[in-house]
Amino acid sequence: MTISSQLFSAPPDIAAKIATRKPIYMGYPMEYANVGAGKDRHIDTCLTRMVESETTNGFEHFELIGDLPNFNYAEIDLSTTFLGHRLELPIMISSLTGGGKKSERINRNLAEAAQHIGLAMTVGSQQIMLEYPETRPSFEVRRWAPDILLLADLGLVHLNCGLTVQKCRDAVEAIGADGLVLYLNPMHEVVQRNGILDFTGLLGKLETLCADFPYPIMIKEVGYGFSDVALQRIRTCPIAALDVAGMGGTCWSRIEAESGRMRLSPVLELGVKTAETLEAALRILPRKIEVLASGGIRTGADMAKSLAMGATATGMGLPFLRWSFDSAHRVVAEVERLTEELRLCLWYTGSRTLSELKHKVKNTCAQRI
Ligand SMILES: Cc1cc2nc3c(=O)[nH]c(=O)nc-3n(C[C@H](O)[C@H](O)[C@H](O)COP(=O)(O)O)c2cc1C
Image (cartoon, rainbow, N blue to C red):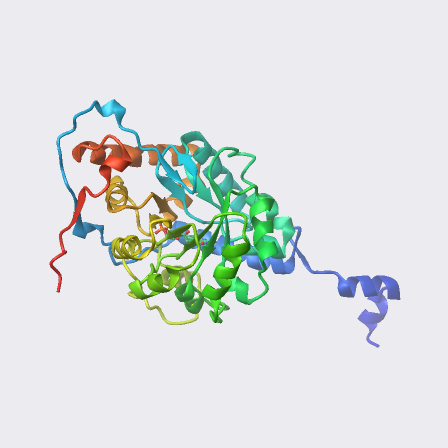
């Protein structure tokens, strides 16, 4: 026995406790610190680095069709109904965060703004909450947004590694959500270190989940969009909605590369541009599946074109992250700026409501071979 171990050896019962105690980091178990730190690293990267695709979102190939307004500008109504809930504005805060040290303030600012101006909101992936219940407060945004359409968020691929119907229910009910978003992100999983790569049989499992699930389910990508072929496979799933989350905005290959968590060398150009995946989703999916447009939506014109094409609402991720890091006031001010642009587009097309805006858009590349 060495001198130091003689001097510091603890009584056997305390030594046993020390041996089994989980290492602690800033009040959290060490593993949580690592997972939460990953979330914070993503946030830092998104706030400080160029993480958007070099590719456009594709809406430059679409033009709004002008008409004469036959109403007063003040009568323009931007409300819509999504998943059975009335939204004052056709905007959803896409899934962003929860579980990291910085998440609670960001989610609070987002939720307060959403409540104030009538946006819908999805929280970030709750996988961390299912594993580490102590992270739950950062997802509990109902206290700041009692009336909004709020959606829970989990990864579809987790159905292949322990996620059950009951856990999906727990994720929704723990935060008082109205429905569940399941992200379907094969490209994101493959580019990141420690991504989950077994996607076997997921659509079959999704069908079984939908059959038993008491809340509406929306499937979403995370920035690569869905191809025609993928949409053909999804079209028979009994989902309530699909968020295309196409290419042209946040690019996960860039985020993982900039965060030092890249597993494969960057494949930045793979994906379907938002306008193209949106057009395909509206063409291929049955009418009863509502379609949300997201992925690089950055202007009122992008929103107007999406809504004119047939999307029920639009979503944004990265801009909301950046604004909410500042304050809830900033979120409200930026959304007001965007909705003024959207109002201008309705005025230009002679549309008083979003239903009147439908179809007032043309694809200027429709003659493509
Ligand atoms: C920092 C950050 C974290 C994200 N976390 C999630 C997540 O937990 N779950 C999810 O479904 N999507 C997540 N996303 C993807 C967004 O919801 C969205 O689909 C994507 O960013 C594309 O939209 P954008 O171009 O407007 O950012 C995240 C995006 C960012 C920027």
